[in-house]
Length: 192
Image (cartoon, rainbow, N blue to C red; front, side, top):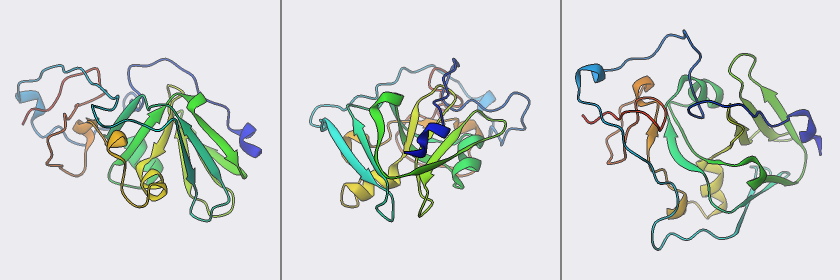
C-alpha cells in the first residue's frame, strides 16, 4: 500500500478547516450587523439513526476499498476556501472521522499535500477519485458522495450533515434549517 507517503497531519487548532491567516475572505453579507449566538453541536446519530459498526466504500473504478468504523466526529457542509479549492466545489459535504476509523483496506492510494494549507488528499491511483482527505487537525474527511454511492445512492440518515461550517466564506447561499456557523463549530452562527 502506497499510503505511507501521506502521513496523518496532527496539529491543534480551533476547527478542522481554518482559513489561512491573512487570506482574503469571501463576504460576510452583513453578518457583523446581525445578532450572533454561540450554539453547541451534536454530531452523533439521533434516535433511530444508528450507525453500523463498519461501512465499506469503494472508489469509482473499484480499485480502492476504504473501511469506516464507528461514528464520525462531525457531519457538515464546509464552505471554507480550503475545501472549496481542494475539492473543486462550492462547498464540501462530508463527514470527519478520527484517523484510526478510516482505513485503506484494499488497493493503492496516491496522495497530494497542499503546499500551504496543511491539508492532504488520498485518492485512487487508477481513477483519481478522492477517497478521503486529512485536515489540519488530523481528522479524515470523507466526501458524502462516495458514502452515498456505497449506500445505494442515498446518504444514510446517521451521516447527513448537521451544520454548515465557515458560512461567512460561502459562495452559494443555502436555505435549510441547519445551524450556519460563521467560522468553526465553536463560534457564532448566522441567524438570518
